[in-house]
Structure formats: structure tokens, C-alpha cells
Image (cartoon, rainbow, N blue to C red; front, side):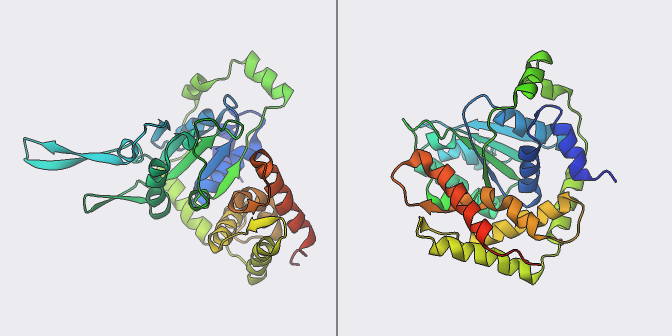
Length: 309
């Protein structure tokens, strides 16, 4: 049986070649009502992935290039005086789209970065004693280059914790890279994509993901993983309760993508590294190695915790 998630995945993979797992994780983030942090070098398809997702779902999309002079109002919006009505009218910013790409998020100041916190967590924007609800579904995809530190402002733990997953796309395998060259697949190729679903169907899928059953033994499994990160001698900071909730939601979405109404231990194991690795703080003086070390530590914890039967 062809499911909605598989339709979305097959549509996006026409453009994003050889990155099926990355596409799946992006869909998981959307269906689990989370947000996605992509750490990678320029030119590997981050913007193309976001655009292809929006086009496949027939959702609105906006890209924001983060720079040191970007202001919170440039993202959220601003109140403008209207002489005609003798009142201030709120002009909505780019955050009021279904899928928002925050490109090079670590190039903006902490003040601007923090402006995203309310939107990411509460899914609304408060300004001038009024609250504006963001459109549903809402997915923030942020990118940053882990190898470039000059002129950047590292994301604080409080903001990294708001992202459901952190992933890296990496270089495509040679056969797929050759295919990209031969078929001239680039960002303009997205225009050839047709929507395979509607906003209403996506919202229905999100509602169904919430109903995917998680056995109590799997909740205990998640808690054991979190407890091990908190006791680890290699970590200064372990997984927070928000991280446990995020892993549970990702497991539910993974189960739904595999056409199940229940979760299994593999749903947790498959997603644990990308859901938890950015939430822990490694005892290391070399920040370049932090991502790899965090993933390795989480992987070792998963290897030694017995899987529920």
C-alpha cells in the first residue's frame, strides 16, 4: 500500500539523490512537530531539500539569510503606522510561512537567534501586547557550517534543545553525484516537482502520529538512555526531559512512516543519535570534534543498554 509519507519521500528523492535517510528524517521532523538543524558545508543541497519538501507538500516557503546585522523584526515582523487608519498595523515577517529556512543561523547575534525561541516552541509570535499564531504545519529548518567559526555566534544550549534533530547531509556517493551532473539536477529542477498532497492531509498525518502507541517498556528504555547520558563521565551535560519527549515523538513518527500504529525499539535506536547528540555537552576542548564525539558516546550508550523485548 502506498502511504502519504512514502509518496512525499519518493517525490523529494527525485531531486535529492542518494540521501533517502536524510529525506526520511526531515519528514519525521515535520510529522513529529519538531524543527531541524542541518550542520554541513555549503553546496550539498540543504536549501534544495527545504524547497523540495515545501513543493511536495504544497506549502509556503521562505528562506532567511542570517547575518550579523539581521534584527528580530526582520524575522518576526514589525508594526507600521498607517496614516489612513491612524493606527499601527502589524506587517508579518518571513516566520509566517509553513516552512522557513534559517540559513547560517549562527551568523546572527544571540538577540536575533533568541527571537526564534518563542516561535519554535510556542508556535506564535507576541509583539505590541498582541499574539499572532503561526501557520500549521510549521517547520523551521536551520543550517550552519560546523567548520567555519570566524564571525559566528554559537547556538546556546537552550536553542539547540529546541531542535528535534540535528543531521548532516554529507557528500553524495559518486554514482549519485554523476547523476546530478549528467541530468543537471539543481535548485531550478524543483520547478518540475508537483505537489503530492495537501496541507489538510499533512495535518491529518500529524494528528495520526500523535496516536501511535508507545509501550511503557519503551518509555522506560528512553529514560534509561537519558539517565546514562547524565551519568556519563564523558559528558558535562546530559539529555533533558525535553530531549526524552523529542525522542518519543520521533519514534512515533518513525513508526507511522513504516505504516505501523505502534512503536518498536528500532524506532528509538534509529533516531536516538540525531535526536540526542546536539543536546549533550562533551567534555572536550576541541569543538570541531564535539559532533562526532557526541554521536559516538550516544551510540556506545545504545549498545550497552538492553533492548526491551
